[in-house]
Length: 139
Image 1 (tube, helix red, strand yellow):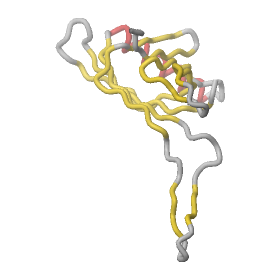
Image 2 (image 1 turned 90 degrees about the horizontal axis):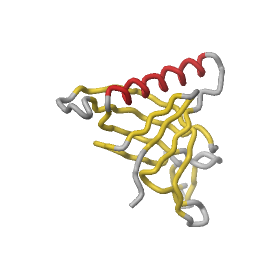
Image 3 (image 1 turned 45 degrees about the vertical axis):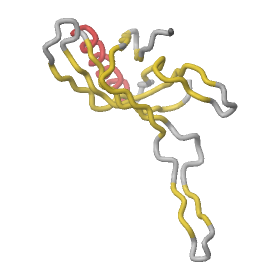
Image 4 (image 1 turned 60 degrees about the vertical axis):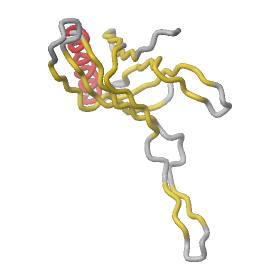
């Protein structure tokens, strides 16, 4: 069986997470269908391919928590300086199915939101870290 993990990298800092309390990857809002008075469907939504959103909670070591916060800080610093603030994400948890029906592991560019930690009584993984990732564009 393939080892499952999420790996985040930016500017030489990398963290790989393997123990998850929660992992959810969803497609962002793709629009709505409303109906006219005559019953004709009226579809709305973006003209581009919908982006993905990850909600993650993972058990982490002190080093993993510190690396995650370095990644967040570097991403935010680069964003403020109008630099390339994309975090490279390698998702080996859930495969992505392409338009042609082929499933493969995903590589994405993302931005991180709301990183936080909760301390727990576990010597190997003393933190549960939680964060949200939003896809920016394709690699």
